Length: 312
Ligand SMILES: Nc1ncnc2c1ncn2[C@@H]1O[C@H](COP(=O)(O)OP(=O)(O)OP(=O)(O)O)[C@@H](O)[C@H]1O
Image 1 (cartoon, helix red, strand yellow):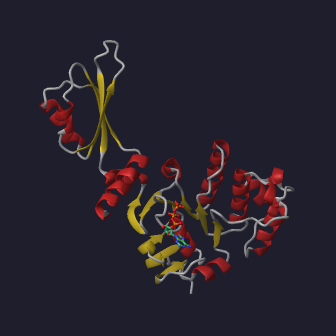
Image 2 (cartoon, helix red, strand yellow; image 1 turned 45 degrees about the vertical axis):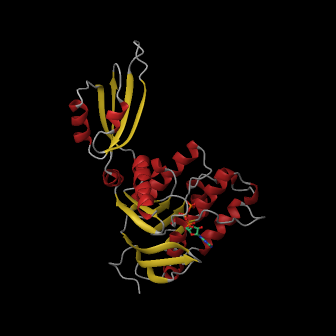
Image 3 (cartoon, rainbow, N blue to C red; image 1 turned 90 degrees about the vertical axis):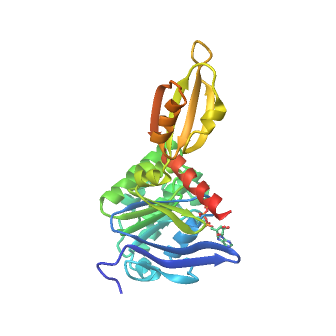
């Protein structure tokens, strides 16, 4: 039964294996109404499998998936979910308009096909056969199918793959409108800048498990590390720099100063205050000192590499 208070998506200790590969490993999470959620993870982390389980296309070996308190199938039949999958084949020999028209007819709460075509930016190619579309055009048509009716949850698996920069920007603008209307949006992506810019919650999957769950800022903070950069003049004792406390990486390059002897030192540190203090402790005089947080991309790499090291 659907209940008012049930989360939009609920995974309760969900596990799914393919032979020896545990694609989803005890995943528990809730999505709340109106959230825009990015699902990140390296190749093979279990993103597509999780979305397939969510949509009832695959069934868990153990645990349960609920959408709006009901089974995925019940929620989909009720028209509460619109989905855009990575490899979803489009029917051959039909036009874009025919396909979108069909999706509208099948939706319990359909929009007008003309509006759906316009919103997805495919009105100009409505008469084209869907098997003659470019990769980016096909993605837009898949998006039109996912938004053919008034769904409460939109699920997108790597939606902007194959889209050029302008198409991608237009796509996210449309997606934001969907979110602003109170819909929950869940998207898997490899573009970390998209997750950073679009999502108000980021889930990082690794080997089927949830490695991090929070805002992009929280994920960056969880990765802990900060970037430190400064210039030094004269002889550099790299061994001494390498021995600095809390250092996780070090690069030294020519700073391009006119004198030619300058070096730029770039450090990643788990405790920037302590590392900078120790730099002064070495009797060095750093110029142009900068300390900055990690970008989401670096945080993601730091988190997943640390986890790899643990499981090795
Ligand atoms: N049908 C299947 N049969 C066998 N193994 C599978 C199947 N589907 C997925 N896997 C395996 O399960 C793991 C998770 O795959 P999944 O496609 O969910 O990852 P992903 O995070 O979406 O990866 P990508 O970023 O590469 O799309 C991988 O090791 C994959 O090889």
